[in-house]
Length: 440
Image (spheres, one colour):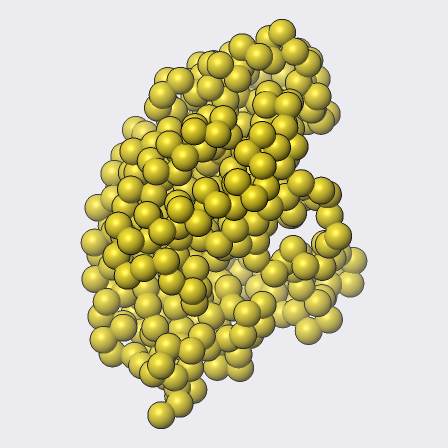
């Protein structure tokens, strides 16, 4: 099928995430290799967002494809989650070796939202408490409870939701300020958070969920000292710390796990996306030895048919081997300075660039509509100039996404310096469109 036929049939017979399907004009991709995507007609696109910040090792890695074929020939494509399988034993042990600290037990799911749903259950069952804290700039998934933890406006259409979810401001909110330095932000935010905990009743709060580095809502690392301070505050009240690393984990930030940057250990760690480089669906919830011991004597009330799916676990094994053998985590760390330098050059040249951030190959550019820093797009909305810029990127062979006023820059961890600069050269040209929309 050609691109037009693919798009027409998809729109006629399938539904689309977070979109009105009528005006949607999706790209049609037939194959992908490395950091590039290809249409049926052969047009090449540089994948500058790893699809959904998830194809961490790049597309169609030959070593992983070979291992997937071997797994298909292994005569164990499915086993019920009640079964013990060799690959389940191996991958659980491998993750216990890779995750720092005493997170040594894992519950395998089919994605990140499901991992977070099970982390909510585990926290409530373990503590005997009901309430969950999370932040307004967070995104934790589109399933029912995970959506109620989510702070961004995608939650609104899914309300009213389940009870017990308390959202608080971030240490670096969009407009309100807890201070101008990391020390001020950390101290003031933790003081604010402790007051919230006291209002809600610490004896009622099971856990606080945080994206270790905020993902779609701005690629925002925490201020220096904040995560250890949060760890100490939660310990004071017996509240668990859950780090959602569905997006920022598995090398994306230049370390295998993002919390390694910040000097604090979670009680529960959730992961997905990069675990299999999204070649197949897989997520996981990791828990400390103390929590795991609780569930050896008490029922964990969770599970779905495809949990601990043997084929998906085998793909995760292969992806981890490639990621580590080819030092893709190290490459993400090395490419950070290239990305930041390119972003700084864009800000110097383009009045529509308000700010930029990157940690490893986890980056974003914020766009403004005036020199006072007003966000170019409304909250939970769009702007015609951004729409035209994104159309220009399609024309020029760059695939990425914009999230309201933020342009995402999250390529595969396998990207070379030349390929990275190729992407930023296209962005440089596209920003001329948003520059025209800057007032004054």
